[in-house]
Length: 377
View 1: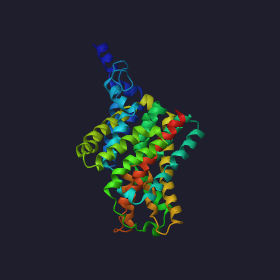
View 2: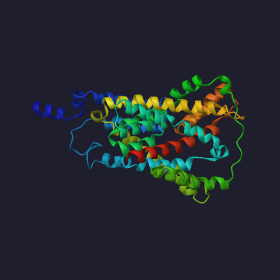
View 3: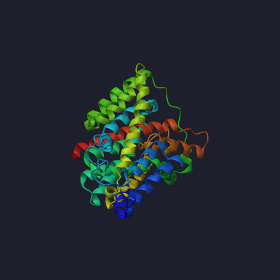
View 4: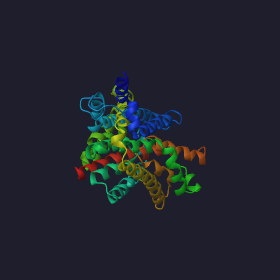
């Protein structure tokens, strides 16, 4: 009986936790994500499924039972297929397109430049990752964290360095959730109070015809430049066409509610579950988290600095805070810019202008991902 009891205990997860404390570390991280999502409301739609996925993915078990996400024919393995093939990120982009109002961007096209400037974090981090020894495909996958776009990071990593999906996705979503912590100090450091008080003029009214033509023209211009961005930008602009054309309201409603919610749940949970301690906890993961923080910080700073540079040549000044929303963390960074503007002047509403930069950042990061993929495939 004692032998049977000992054999039973040796088959439990408790025994494996005792044997490898790395699982305890990862479960603690998962619990922290869930706490931050629920108690602090840091991007709960992302952190809650990711955090719970980390917890589930780090319950240790005997290999060979067809349970784990890396075991063939397991349920989690099949769900993870949507990550490794880029299906979930493309579906998320469909929903984002159906949710995004590009009118503020069309009303003031020069704000697109801030979305482009914020992508500098990607290329600086690419060089940094190469310098510390990452392979080119790994470096490109890490660099895209600078775009602050979780689905784009996952999509590119799945194509170039699938073994790094877990740490890169966790880093990307972590920094997206920590926007209220990371971006405000950078914005305050790089701007004066006078600059933060700059008021933006009301944008012109955008016609229905412009809104209707935009997704068609944009997909042609962007995807002819970077054809490998088609899976993301094609779905983004399709969703936006559903939104603005006026005859596909049911499709638009489905895309921005049930479809994107389902994809977000599966994407977040399976990415979290992919962080098994025996695969995830290694020096490369530490390097990825460090480089991800650098990438996100440089992307924020680049946008702010470029806005200040534009003001040297413009009669009508731009509030430099808008540059921070050039990263593609929609709508978190736009909201943070708006909040900081309100702190300086409760009557200064920057949200719509920030959303213009934010939406251009989404397009910019997808184009950068396509360019990197085309060079390294």
